Length: 226
Image (cartoon, rainbow, N blue to C red; front, side, top):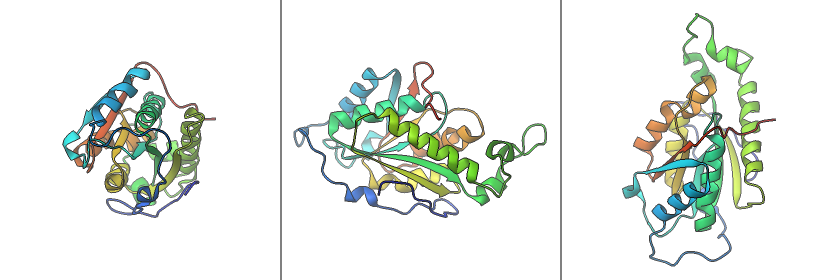
């Protein structure tokens, strides 16, 4: 599953993949069965990264003694690097597998985007190719996924997924049941940032079927996209 996929989603979500259930078991010493680890793993990860990490929806955890897979929402903005750092810290503490996940807007999402305050097409300006073209968004997404993977260094329990969907929040929420935890960055600004992390963060916290960790960087930690 290494590499990127693109699902032509529409409506609330176009991603319908349960690949997280196919993960191989991670090596190393796993935490003892029955010992609650979710809260402690998040706390330890936040302490080792330049960030604050808030755990939401702990009552949604099917098991508090295991985190085997983590969905990491990768986007632009000042919290993006810290989001990856915290996700790795959680994975290191629990032997979990990470899925780096970025959402590209569909044509329908671009068509529905509001114009800029001066009457210009804000999405066209951001994409560089007009409402009907997603090439620039896809290139940005691939760059962000590359940067996130590079930031993980030698960590090897990781996959990446570029998915096309009308709603970033819808794609993340739809995939959430297939993971034990979702990690997202705190809300940010900018056209691409709003699509990935604007109201998306609140929606994911409210609607995801598993616990959600919201990461806010202590300073600038934006991913370095070449």
